[in-house]
Image (cartoon, rainbow, N blue to C red):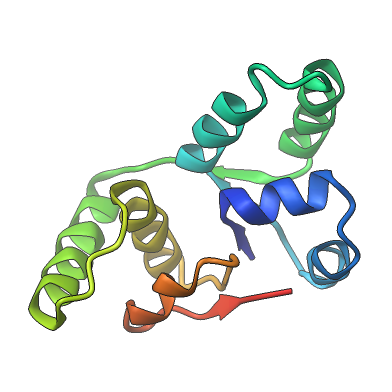
Length: 125
């Protein structure tokens, strides 16, 4: 399962539904985009050191998904599909969706706009 930033935050904050879904996943994958968003989000947190330490342990146990040439192909297709249907989504979420489609992996997210992306399974807690 690929984690969106809100899913990563929910797991870090021990939200029961998110933790349950997270713990049932056969594998966890983190898009590099999510890591950047999460690190930006915790940069000024009073719990920054705790979150950074937790994140480093998680990174050691997961696979980081980088953007590559194949991702760019999926990105372009998704963006064109969404433009045609009039359902744009934020740019970073386009990249996250492209990685989820490229790797054929469900995406854990609260963001309902991912439902507009064809051939993407969104998991919500």
